[in-house]
Image (cartoon, rainbow, N blue to C red; front, side):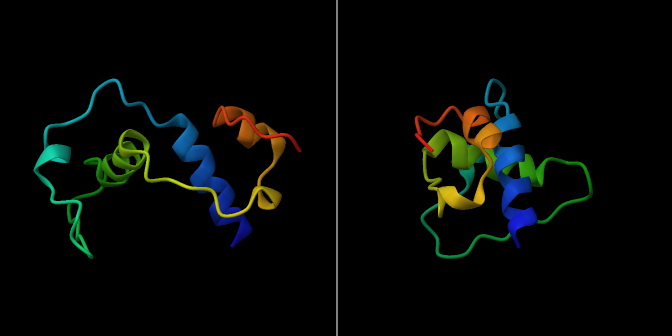
Length: 80
């Protein structure tokens, strides 16, 4: 589980929000469950990561599970 969390934080830190598709504004993000279906490589994961980053809905569960380099990549002001 820790590897999965670490991988998420790394992908989150690398997510570019300079170019965002209009589809991000069409989705009703207030729904309790949203299904995203599409072929491989069309940007499903990127869409979610961009939304999380743009909307600021991301929160960190525990700092203890992340390495200092990941925290720095996320540009978080955290003192370990």
